[in-house]
Length: 387
Ligand SMILES: Cc1cc2nc3c(=O)[nH]c(=O)nc-3n(C[C@H](O)[C@H](O)[C@H](O)COP(=O)(O)OP(=O)(O)OC[C@H]3O[C@@H](n4cnc5c(N)ncnc54)[C@H](O)[C@@H]3O)c2cc1C
Image (tube, rainbow, N blue to C red; front, side, top):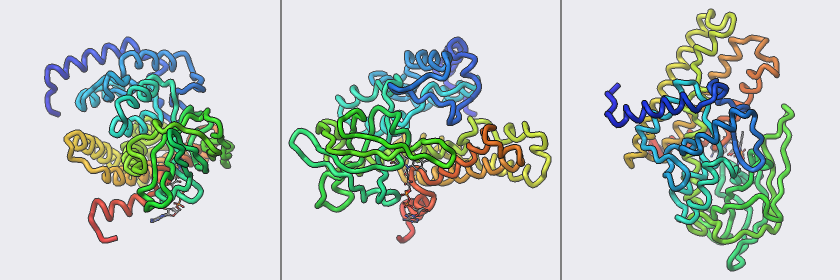
């Protein structure tokens, strides 16, 4: 590893002592699992005092969104400092203080396409964990073929009147605002008549209905818009050019879902997870599969870092996110198959956590665009093969 410059070494030392002093012990369990995430928002109930304290302390330093500019609630860290931030957090096995669709998806899109006024208005409440966002892309007739969205916005001068239905809106019943794709020109070719609109979930005419899964949980909703009145200044980017914003946001969503091949394992190595099983690493076939998955996970996380560096240097292509998403999610499914195989019938106990996590990974290769669709993008846009 190259030697750190003096400035970076000093930054690391200061960050290390700040984390030592400020990260509560309870938050040092590396528990970045689906059940332990702090999502924030008006309806959020903290799972513990420690979770609240850790969030508040990180907010004061801008560490919930370390690379965002200070003016929008971030810490203004550059790429090198960001890497150090994550290395130091991992060193103490610390949890991320806040995770949200606002941080992963809307924030990057607003930083790129938003007006200064929009950035100052919407980004700081995301950084402070005050407003929780959900994603209104999919509709009953528009999933992989997303540009077919039919939710429509009628132009009424200074506002839109929105009617239609979204589906699979994760956590819509818990979110405060939604970013939605709305057809605002019905005569234009389908990619050219869509606007990217921000909508307060408390707007009259916006309602949600949870979709109950076989597990009993309801992580998704149907979301309905019935004559919802939305001011024009809530459009991000140009009217009817929302497809550009939507695609840009998807590259961030896909990179996030790829999870660097570590997925729901809380960042722990597969070897460490399996060695906790009584006979975890004894079976030579399982051991060799686990080693292969571990090496692949390392390769993906290094590839992810490389793409982030390339993106910062202006050399990245958004289409690389399809590759990362495909590799990361397929590997995450494999990782959980191995955890289940090592755990045997004990792992099927629902309350134990392994079975729900294993089943959840099956959705990784659907959400944010399916593996088949990712392979299509890789073939056409990365490899340049004929359609
Ligand atoms: C856990 C989870 C969370 C989600 N959260 C949200 C959310 O918050 N907001 C939101 O808007 N949506 C959300 N979604 C929806 C998700 O984006 C869609 O499910 C996804 O884009 C696929 O669309 P679809 O379900 O309509 O399937 P379809 O598009 O109908 O696909 C059905 C099958 O056909 C295949 N297929 C389709 N087109 C092609 C093609 N061109 N080439 C090859 N194969 C193809 C697909 O791979 C798939 O196997 C979520 C989904 C999941 C599973």
